Length: 107
Image (tube, rainbow, N blue to C red):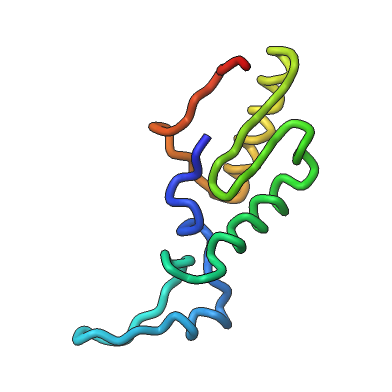
């Protein structure tokens, strides 16, 4: 499964918004979410995903940046894993890109 717009879903800390300030002819603005191009954006997103799925990592879920793999040995277990994964994503208001998600693949 692929995270929709990856780290653009991670909100900037209030104290860090000032560090992303830019000025245009229409005014001065700052980012509310992590913008593309920050040196630590990928690492920050990875750390957020590992924190989010810490109890499932390497057992039921693998996460690499914005890619998430749910795994199980039995079909019924897989449905439970997917439900937990989707509930966790919903709880933290993270979205997946349905066009880049494959469900029910067997290895």
